[in-house]
Length: 282
Image 1 (cartoon, helix red, strand yellow):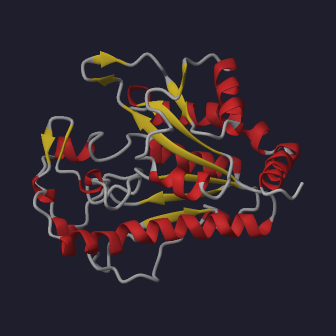
Image 2: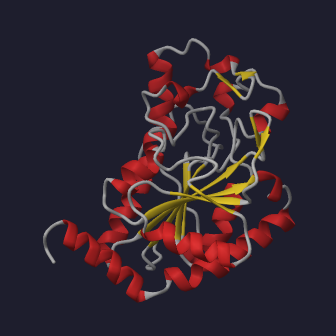
Image 3: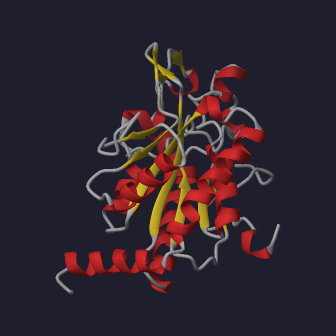
C-alpha cells in the first residue's frame, strides 16, 4: 500500500467501548488526495466491539445485511485506490449504531429488523446510547466533515458519493435493478451517473430500490446536501457482490464509468459556478 493510501484512525476521542487492540471507529483512505471527490461508506463493516459481545445474534445474522452492506466496503476501498480519491469508512456494524441515521432515530439502535430481534439493543438506557455515539458515531461524522472541509479549502467544490448495497428481495418481492442511483433535490451527479451506468449496459434504478428523498439518509443530507455539494448514493444489489471476483469486476466497471466524469475539470467548474449562483455571487 502506498503512503497516500495509508488508513488513518481517530485518536482524538476516548475509545469508550474499544480495547487498545481494536480498530478505531473509522478509516480514512488517501487522506491527502487532491481530486475533489469524497467517497463514504456508512455500513462498511460487520465488526462488533468485544465490549458488546455478539449482541445476542448468531453468526449468520452478524454477517448478513442486518449488520452490514455486503460488499460495499470492498467496493469503496477499490474505488478509492483506483480513482485516487479520499474515502471515509465506518469500521463497526450498523447494529452498534447506524451512522446513516439521526442519532435520535429509533433505527440508530435497531431492536428488530429483517424479522430478526437484536437482544443486545433492547431496552438500552440513554447512557448506553450516548456511550456508543461518543465512541463510534460522532468520531465517524467528525472525520467525514473534516475531509469535506479539507477538500473545499483545497480547491473546487467536491463531489460527495455514498456507497451502499441492497438485498435482491424485499418483502418477498424481487428487485430487478442491478444498481441504483439515489438523489434528492440535486440532480448534477444523478444525471451523469445514471447515463454512464445505463450506457454500460446495467439495469439502473432511478431513486430505486430506495429514494434519496427518504429522511433517514443522514450522512448525505448533513454532509452533502446541506453544504451544497453535488452528491449521490450508489447502491449495488448484494447477490452481485458475493465474492472477491465479483467485487473486483464491479469496482472496475464503476471506476471506468466514474473516472472520466470525476476527472473532468469543467465538471467541477460547473459545480462551483452553481454554488456561487445559488449564493448570489455569480
